[in-house]
Image (cartoon, rainbow, N blue to C red; front, side, top):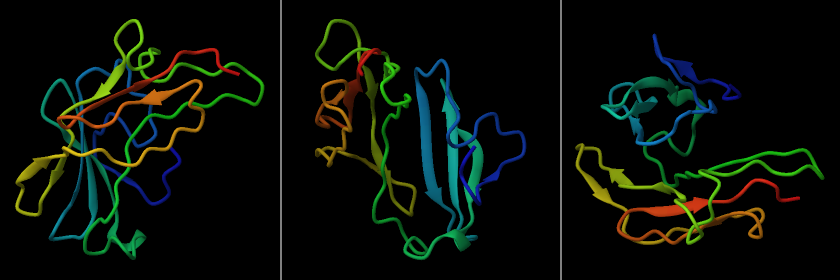
Length: 150
């Protein structure tokens, strides 16, 4: 794990940066605790999310009161000139097969109410010949790409 300052919860089965396999029906939540000011990460696999750990409020300046930006996505890495690994399920959105997806994307308010993300967000794709992501529609999107790009 390369997350300086992250404090793992007792008994946590995953940490930020860990490979989650298999990865279907994973729930992730990031919430600010109003009492402590810490940013907690929760994870659930086919069930109710449990605490993974937290980022202490002392790590943040701009997020001391609230978050003004949040990112999510997929990441793959290959040494230069070597074929890349697959992203997601290894299928491009709209291609033959089932692409990986994010579903039920939501913003959670301080009072616990949540609202679905219904509009598209900016994207960053390092190599659009290898990987792709669809616009967000009805609080979800598809992403991925095959192995073997150079």
